[in-house]
Length: 149
Image (tube, rainbow, N blue to C red; front, side):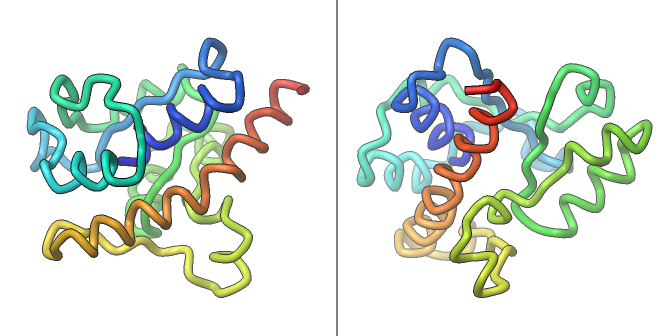
């Protein structure tokens, strides 16, 4: 969901041609799976354009990708820890951030962790969408700053 929300946010910000947004998990258990139908439904409910929801397949993050990326966003601290442990050096470790660390409300509330909506219904996916959407403007602003814009 975060990949698709952030792609849309960068498009709206006029940075869609300059910023690549991709996603991958930290474990292999979902590799090859499609976007969860409840996630796709939540994205549609909230107006995120369907830019290929059906084509999306889960992948596992590979440590050599650190050389290719500028920012690695994690949903929860245990994911961030796994990514940092997989990083080849301090520069790569510094690329790992919690997604909600870009949401000033979440930072103020101390609620940077995102619950996995998998075991919930539509409302859990709507909550996850809201958490991602709350962080998206901060991610866009951060990247815009890194691009010098």
